[in-house]
Structures are given as structure tokens and as C-alpha cells.
Amino acid sequence: MGDCTGRGLVSTLNLAPDHARGLSLAETAHGARISLTARLLRRLLSLLGSPPIGVQLWNGDPIQVGTGPTLATIFIKDRSALLKFLVDPEMQFGELYLDGRIALQGGDLVALLQQVFLRQPRAADPDSVSARLTALLRNTQRNTLSGSRRNIRTHYDLGNDFYRLWLDPTLAYTCAYFATPESTLAEAQLAKYDHVCRKLNLRAGDEVVELGCGWGSLAMHAASRYGARVRAFNISHEQIKHAREQALSLGLGDRVEFIEDDYRNLSSSCDAIVSVGMLEHVGRENFAGLGRLIARSLRTTGRGLIHTIGRSAPAPTNPWIERHIFPGAYIPSLREILQIFELTDMSVNDVENLRPHYARTLELWLSAFEAQRAAVTTMFDERFVRMWRLYLAGSQAAFQSGDLQLFQVLFSPARHGQLAWTRAHWYDTTRAPAWNTAKS
Image (cartoon, rainbow, N blue to C red; front, side, top):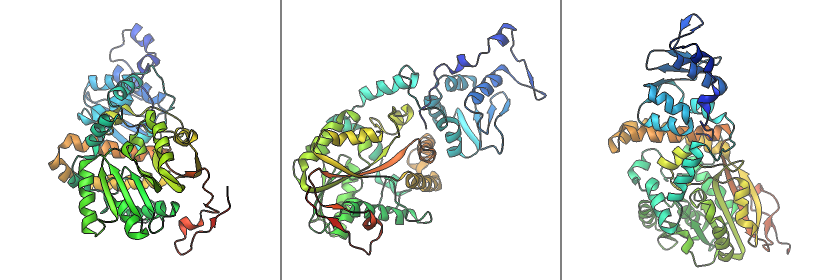
């Protein structure tokens, strides 16, 4: 969900004249008698741009705004739920949806989230309810060495069987790369691994460090397809356990080492550093330290790539997402990402935005998740299903709308003279890369 807030929404509706007349049920609109509550909500939806949605209140009042086909109809089950939503929609929509006090009666949840939340201005109000809550949560969920373990295990140690239900066979839980929109999710995840390895110009014998390796598929791909030797760090016990088992079953035990430890404890040098989907969990306060670690670890001819969710401008993490899905997470702007390298002897060589690819990835994840709803409910409960549905749908909506981006940043030591002339070798696997060997 987006970054609008509910501060002052009720007061901006300016219903004082009606209260002065003692209005309680009062008004005929289009020939239908509607309550003051319905008027209040209709005015709110007007302020939100009159999205083409329907609302059904607990008292039977129907509310229809916008023009064109109705994207979705939501049911608000009690007056208290409506008041909470009016005061802080960014946080309370998710809370009330989890509790079943707001429900979707029909239509498209992704479209609803886009229309109601993500079309709003994203300027952060430091005094808003959600901004204060986000600051409070971040103080208790900071990514210290112990805090990072707690935050990561909240999400990634839900059990490998859960993720197997709806991810592709490699258990890739990051943005895929679709050569065509018709590619399957499994094809697109393998294409992502190749895209990353070709950008890094991996060669046989290269020593690679992966910071945050998920279930290990990229590390094993780099070892089996490109001949690299990979040391992969992760603090999720469930993921590391699976990765080690897979490496042994594939005969890669001597080429890939999966280390259950924090990336900050890396002490060796390497030819390449790669991080796919970890930066969001590092915490902005740790970016400078990450930059120093990269600078001291990469050899002179080394290469590095960071693949991360990002924003067009700095903004706080959605408080509902931080509370329920990714405690301690921070999604950086591109400027904040580049600051990782500014105080070190590093040069940014390329930035690519794969936003439509992540929108498509999430669309397929959500579809697979819904197909496994019964199994997920058995594993957890219906509230958990609603929580993850809202998270996946909100994320898809955010990438479709441009609220979120997906950046791949390619970098190297500033004195590295071997840079590719063009990007052609990233896309043409039949052609060897042409390298610029001029001295810097």
C-alpha cells in the first residue's frame, strides 16, 4: 500500500453546517435517503479522487462513487471500523482487513489498492499517525546483529513448505526477469540468474560472495553454470538448511559454501560481490558500513551488483508492512542507494530499473498463492491468508503504479579498467562480451 496518511481527514470534510442543523439521518441524494455516516464516507472518497469503487455499510447504505465500471466493492462491518479507517487509512485498512471488519465483496483487490491508496500524494508528514508509528517501530526493530536475526526470522523462517506452495521450483523470492511477458515464472527466475551473472561477467574460478542468499539458487546457478566458487551468507536458518541440502544433492558441495552468519562478519576478499533482495533489510543507518565492507572486500578487478526494491524519492516504510510482514525493513531511493558508494573508492557503472518485471512476478505469485489458499489456511489460519493476500496484492499494485521500483546497480572499484563498451552481452548469450581494457 502507498504512503498517504489519514491525519486530519475527518476535519477536512467540513460537516459543521449539517451538525448545526442537527442532522442525524438527513439527506436525499439521487432520490435515496442516506445517513450522515454515508455522507462522510462519500466526501472522503471524493477527496481521494472519486475512485470507481462501491462501499456497503453495516446499516445497508450503499455508496457508489466515480464513473465507469466498479473496480471493487468493500463491506465495512461496523461504525468503529469506519472511524478507524477515516483517522488512519494507511494503517487501519490492513488491520481491519486482517480482522475481517473490512471485506472485499467483489472485484479486484489490486485495483482497489491502486485507486484508493497509491494515487495519493506521497509526501511524508512527520506528525502523522502512521509516521509516528513507523518511527516507533523502527526504534524497536533496528537491524543490529541481534535485531536483524529476529527481523529476518519473522518472515523467512515461516517454513520452507509454505514457500514451496507458491514460489517456482528454485524457491526464488525476488524479482524475476521476463524475456517476454509470456515467459513462465520458472523460466523468468532462471533468466534473472543469468542476467545477474552476465552483468558480473562471471568466469570459471571467480571467487564470489553473496550477501543474503535466500534458498541458495543464485549461488548454485553461478557455480554450476559459470564455474564460480561462491560463499553465501544468510541468517535465516530454514533457508540455509535447504540451500545446503540442495548443494549436496547437486554435487556442488565443494563449489558453494552456505554460511549461517551476518554479512557484516565477512572478512575475506573476492572477485565479485552480489546482493539480491537483501538491501531492503539492511537499514539505512547501516548503508555506510555496507559500503566500507564492499570496498575492503572487492579486489582491484572486482565487480559487484546490488538488486533491490527502491523508490523514486525517500519515504518511510508503510507501517502495516513493517508491523506484519517485514519488521525493520527500509526501501531506499536511488539516491540513498548510490550513497553506499560515494564515500568509498567505488564507481557505479550501470543502473537498470526492472519495475514491470516485479509487477509481473508478483502477479504470478499472488495467483499461485490464491490457488493454494486451502493448504495455507490449514498450515496457518484464515487471518494469515488475508495478511499475505493483502501484502502480495499491495506489492503488485505498488509496482504497477510506480510507487515502488526495482533497481539493479552494477559497480566496481573506481580504478577497475575493464569495463564493457555496451550492454549487448547481457542480452545476447551467443556473443562474447567486448571488454574495454584501457587503463584508467
